[in-house]
Image (cartoon, rainbow over the protein chains, first blue to last red):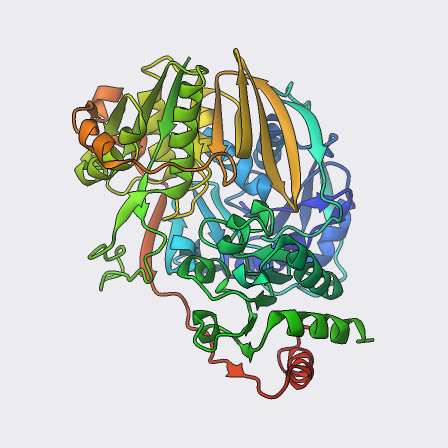
Length: 318
Length: 262
């Protein structure tokens, strides 16, 4: 009755959420007197997860390079059935949101979504999670087995790699016939980490004034920092940035280490979407802008002057 | 083809603060304006647009809740041109979790013959992102999440979903299916007063769990929510001073040596 951690990988390289969750699960398992197992879909160096606390890795065989909901659901189910865990921890990623709830419905259990903290209380795992896009918080307890919790990226510290190696258990799997056909995958010109998983974000607001200046102010600063570009609703609605860039209550809720808000006044819906960022930098000409009440560092200045200067300064760092 | 739209009532996203009740058992709803949850409004509007385009014959609304939700949905969703509203209302649903809601909706929608179920990608209260996928599982239908483009062609459909990192996938399938609506799918509509007045005549079908062939045990929650409270406070920040070049130098120094994020 171990804790099973869904470890996602990108073409064989484990995502940061995989080790982040294993690290947290190891602490929880210690308090519960149980062990940590990992669940891996497809070809990835499964045994290496032992260095982060997994004693067993259930590896579902198959090609999962192209995502299909039906295939993902069946594979997750096969892995969970093989591991028979008391709890499942998974990232609140596309897979965690698209496929996992179907598995939870099949198993007749419950799911705590997008927790930002997990603890052991009364012999069970309890999640703490933002609700109303972070305007309030609550605890969630899943009283059936397996108890499923998804976790927001960057909620826990990355563990240091130890010396362990995990036993790999191959889970035989024959994929169901997908009911949907993938026609086309459209990739952006430059591949970036998704806003919800990004460790650094540079967002532009209405003050950006045009798509051209979004592209010449925000994107270069983001590129210099290795950050994902984001935007306020006003910036998206004005057409300066695509809608999948929107951060906020009706956009993406983000949790980076560094969030730089450029020309964003700080509408309540935007603040709700980024308030858990560890460090917030606000650049705005209006000293009365609400964003400054939430900023770690505030600069009352013009983004047209400040963003290029900051970009150049970052590029000059060794 | 008939469309079922699942819609929920939630606090207006402009609500500046959400406070917990003193005992932490839930949120204090005093003074909060409730609206059709924004992503659900995309779903309702998309249903109406498909009807206007002749792709659908009728749009029926479904919700799990109570009488106060009916008032909001009448003016905010029925008034946009939906035929009627089915309200699943039962005391056993007071502490319903996502699977309980999905089971209720699946039972209610299963009593009709629908080709398409539209849902918002998530409700803006508990942000659980669970009910639509669970509903599809219970109906035995495929689903497509986070859709910002949808084309219906006979009994086939083509949908574009946002899978993260700016990657969009175009998928094709056969109806029936569940689709969850993301921003960009359709410009949401807000009802005009004469339509809101007319919507007062529209039918609301109240269903108990018994009416749907479900028992209280079927909706006993696995997930329970307690200890509602405020977000953790943020440490106080500081304003940088000087000219732009000076502030930029101070900022980079602070990010590197104080906050240690560079």
